Image (cartoon, rainbow, N blue to C red; front, side):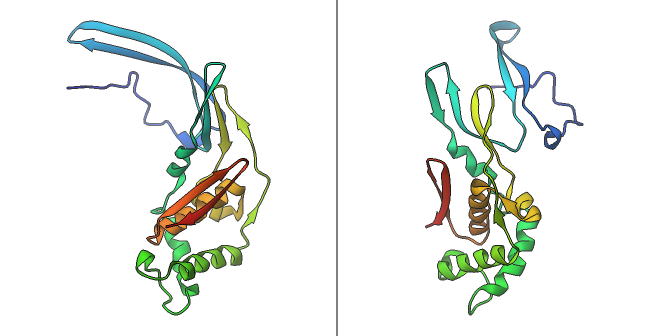
Length: 186
């Protein structure tokens, strides 16, 4: 049996969305068996804002770990803003005027999503690079925020389109190239 406890617990008033810059903190790990202390370590950490997408992690002075797989956490197909977008976009699907995911031709469905984004005037803006102490991160908003503003950097646009594909029942694939990302689907 393993019991875990966060001490002190995060206060109920903690709002991750209000954290706008990295903040240093300490992570203390204590392992006990009964009342016996088996291990106690403390490590400095950096708490990142929720819109900092980690793409790489520096480990020591000579090693970097790829963390681009964390980008999939930015896919939010159940967000109400995505549902509202789909309601308008399905009118653009040739013939059926509905989304059927993998049960129908996928190109017509993807084109309807793209055409709705285009009709809303979604534009790509400068791609900000952000560096934190132990990670290379990119400021990346979730798709609902992108749809609300109509502006996105390349990765935000890719993740927004991937979210829309997933929301209609297609399986998105995000491909990373040096300095760029794009989306496809199975």
